[in-house]
Image 1 (cartoon, rainbow, N blue to C red):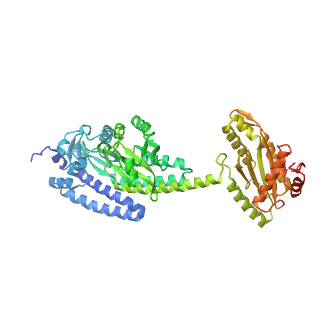
Image 2 (cartoon, rainbow, N blue to C red):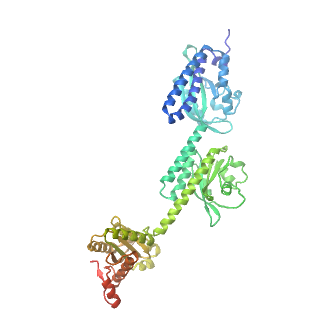
Image 3 (cartoon, rainbow, N blue to C red):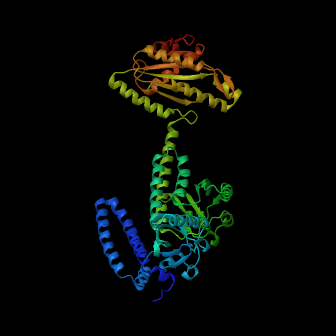
Length: 551
């Protein structure tokens, strides 16, 4: 009988049928492995049982197929496979593809047979180069090859896939071609990317040290984990009723950089039209998806977006309860069908971020209320709270403590001659010097203007207190370098102690203040300790020196 020299005849001949059987086994094994991976996470013993069962079943299948090497069986088997399968000759041209291959790529086999991968319109150059390189490896080293790739189809969509292919040995042991299959793992990859994104965002929120760094990091994290090319935050300003673009991130391409420059100045007024991606998302209070920006007539910046090579887009609100705090928008270079699962995940992430922003803002407001805005030192409110707590502990354990009231001499002169900015720098440097002289557990605070206070807890003797006072006098008398100018100021310090001078926070602060004024009245650059006898003497004879110096 004369052999018909067609692709089907070659594939179903005695030499090629085993190759297709091997391929079929590979397809089934790939599916089994995919299922088994999930089982491995739950229980490794289940994976072993699955592997054993599949091996036994496939062994029987192979034996059956080898005994029935007929053209009809091979054809039915090939068309029944749910995965795309193809055959290539040694010249790299497609000889056979099955119906699953046609469905996957969206092109009839008649346009494929006899062509090389680089001649197919749906195949990108980079992909064809990888295909040719992997084929060349198989021609040089026959065997089986498995690798992951991203494959484009006729409709422009991209698929994450596992490519499996094996060489076919013809008569005389020579390589006659190769057979391969494509396993689409796009859904699995999307789920993995979503989970990676969720975990990454949660980690960013957990590890962020301040609110300023959180959103830029999240934008970049979402773009990089999900493969989006540009993202931006529009923060809502309720007082102006506008959304301002305040943070953005994009891949390093010239067209994206130009788009970012234009978007960086954008302000979106909030109205009832719900036109455009940002307004629509704000108005609806839920995620919005645009498959192709070029066909959306509501976008005012459509031309700019298309010029940047961007097409697919989605946005979601940052919410705290019913309040929308801002909008995160993302763009992709490809036309993308709506991803319902991604939109659900985005809505959840938007609530996470919104709640984080509200919590951090409350913490920032509390910190601002409890700390001085210029120096960062505790405010009067926080200082009084710490002093009251320290008094309770001192009374309970029979300890002594001291309050120091510190006033910079001639600070107003620095403000008037060098300006308020120089004055603020002097205050910051003063606070730094005070903090450098604190013991563990002590507190320095700024009351306002040029007035500072210190709380010294658990002092062992008045000598310790006097020693600290003299050290501060010397430290603050050293020249300050302010805006390129050497500035010299001094300090007047007043001290009160518990339990000798007062039993409550208000009295101790008042008495320390009175002692500080004594130090100023006696020539400045001094430390004075308060005492009841001297206070009475001052009231009876205002001209008296009325001070007990720290020295």
